Picture (cartoon, rainbow, N blue to C red):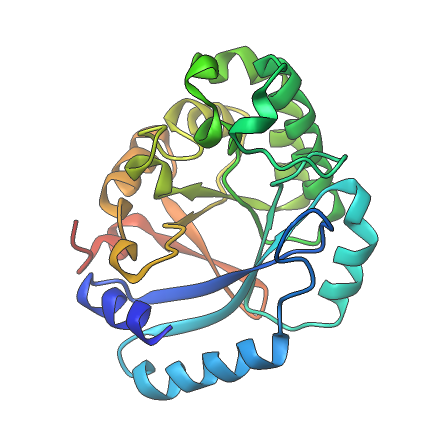
Length: 255
């Protein structure tokens, strides 16, 4: 955490959320590994060291699918955070959406059930933001790289409606800019459709599993959001949302 905080300060980032994965899916090697007390102790340590230069949020990225919903609900009811992301990484049968999952499946076989699970995650109302809205494109093997979000607009529209009705944001995950998709998750087409549906709530995240990528891709992403009609980004304290204008976010951020 300290290394990431130093990187954030150097990049001009003024706020960072440590959204460690919380996994309840039995297929996940990290299932039940998360140690909340240790996590919060570590957060307090970096707040003491970097608090004058950086706002540090206690947060979590909680995996979701309908088979583990009861476990997720129990966990969230027992914890206090500033910010919680809900993410779908697994199909209901416990199959992780990695390249091997695409074997013998069409893109429809992967994306349609995935978007169904995302919609269910939104409808719970348990999450502040939904992570990497079209995640499977990151892991699609070369044989399945023809993904076009337009083919799934009809499946995204109900997700947008649920997000807007529930007042839930979705994340613009910048890690795709530096990985195989070479575009954020989601990209501008999906953001624009969401705006056309009446939505305005997004968060930004660099999905940094290493200090050197803290803040990566944010300037480009903020430009994209403005072009798509999003004037501000949602931020959270104690699960309470506020909006921060994009010009304010740009101050000090380096590319």
